[in-house]
Length: 380
Image 1 (cartoon, rainbow, N blue to C red):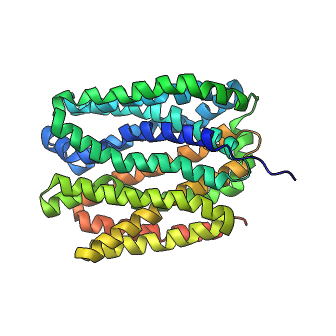
Image 2 (cartoon, helix red, strand yellow; image 1 turned 120 degrees about the horizontal axis):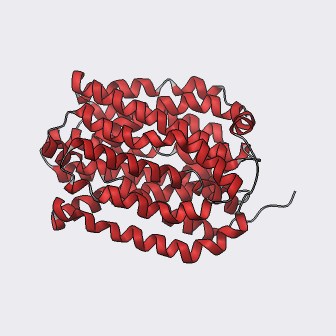
Image 3 (spheres, rainbow, N blue to C red; image 1 turned 90 degrees about the vertical axis):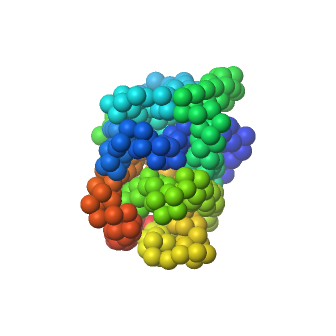
């Protein structure tokens, strides 16, 4: 069987759009202490902001089905960066908690419109190296979550919360760039079918069902570290900059994780890479919580590398399995992923309110160990 070509420039283009898009969704965590103080929010209310942004993910399978049947991937990827940037850039001037929830809900719709078709384009551009392609694509997202928080803190320091909305200009320019460059490339990959969600689920259920358990277990670790790390560090040190730096370290190692995990899984196998990541991650979180100094920083780095590295491997699994309706299949996977994270954020936030942040991290790590039995159910 002839090998399929890996189109580096095309994968890089979509990965760049992922970087710009996700930079705006990363603004919540670093600015959360300021939002909590400004609107007098509890941790549960703060966690609900992220949950509201995840609710539109329930539409992911339907978005994927439309993208498969109508070939709308190009327009969804072009428009999403700007549609996401507008509400996320306005959070600094939002006067009430209710209006803030509305902004995050509209941002969530745009997030769903982007994340369903984009990995499908990457999978088609990646040929036989889908793991490598997903690693590069997810590296764009992780770089955004590394640089985005630092950019947000710097922008607030320079512009202030009242003028923070000017940062949306970068997304508008990106959408213009995608319009003039992505169109020619994507025309070669349009998928026009008449599939159904049921047929898509049947095609990938032997992979998706175990992944549901893995995603749920991982979501608790992902939510506690990604959402409340800055709050934890800021309360320990009294410095918002230290909180942003800690999140930056966590996300930077996440970049290394996603960049290497997919490529390694092309060579070592998907299950093996997932096993090591899912075993090491909860141990690293536990050690991080109960240590200090250099060891604490080292565990933070290991946690970022392992917790965040699993997504490109799972995306590659789904796209390898889904032949007839790849966007709909990815929509099902993304719906489960976002729903699990939304559920976990509310739960860990409530645990943090009742039992404290240290206990919240500990419980999240213990839940993380439950991913291993589901991993063993994945077919080779």
